[in-house]
Length: 252
Length: 321
Image (cartoon, rainbow over all chains, first blue to last red; front, side):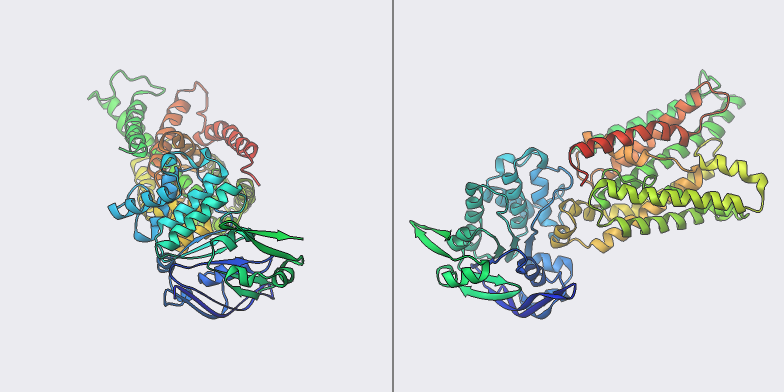
């Protein structure tokens, strides 16, 4: 198992924001975290990475991430925070090359394997033509893909992505979905949070529906995301519908 | 060859030209600074060269610490002067001078620069925008100014006050080779520390959370930059007093040529700071004023408006939240 959480709880400012969550993500698997704002998705992901204090058992690539240093963690999991930043307008390629940091590389000093990983990540995210552009010269969707490419270049067994499609138009969001599927098809594991229920249902092997830090439902999307579960999570009745190969989410 | 290397080579050339020009130009016109007569040799090698070399080392130290602080705090308005490191270093030196331990001035400048660096990093690490960090610096600088005034107020030897006040204005006038060596020694130590932090500064381009997630040891990066910037600023200030804005101007100027990568800006910023201060010092020597204009005063007169302009441009871009 790439990531295994057992009875994990997080307390922030005296309140329990994650409450006894257990969860497994295996190689080649995509797992989506769903739930209303404040359900504990981000805290759960940060706890899983070992960067947020928590109770419970965590195994990330067979080790407790809370006992690993930053580099050891980076070799096991690549993390994309909710609002990824590029403080200085470096080139797209330099930004993606930062994904090779844990291998001892710098953007201006890439070994041949580093360069191969960077090229592959750029290609996968359709950024090859934009590699020399500054991060201040590309669109919001391209920026999101550049940060995703940075995470892919890390070549960690697990990708942890906090709302990777937030603010993207439907086509851009689908292209992110395609990248995640391709990553999983290559044997990678993905844990991501999103408010795009249709996208999560379309590309995930399993979904975990959270509310107030607790798991409401878990399993294959069409089974887990029942009308009752959606109503319990979001306060509105809804259902999933198959539309051709895709899945749509409809709320009343 | 990378843009950063080309910029560095150009700036090495510029520094060299500026240093030679500093031997040539001055209130006493010299036809040939390399002439063998006694008077020329004294003027050139005992007055002008040590002074120019001190200006270069001080400028390089301030340029380097500015670039490193900007990378660490992810803020183009950061530098030793704005963040209060220079003010605190001057306070340390003033305390040493005022209470009769002049020999301890460099050590005190270093110690106090370190205190300011630790304070500003601790307070400013999570500052939301460039302006909020600058405001923390304003607070620290004002505190340093107040404490310098207090030290002068309580100093046991009022006769030395005028000299001390004069010294805090910032100048490289009448500095010796020992002064250049002192600032140079601190610069070498500071540069060694900062260059070990270079990769961490690159990682911080992604912000704090993602930098840690790609494997950067941020505690180590912060410690190295704080110590390095304190060493550079402490040495520079102990020798030349407070000279502001070089640390902002140097990285700002070289970004256009060398790009935005904070690691690849370090060396060009140091070289640009050195060249900039040598040129500024030539200018104050050539100005036909009765009393020589202090380098620190000139730097503030030019740097202040430039700082305001950069800040205004950042605010207009929405970089200041």
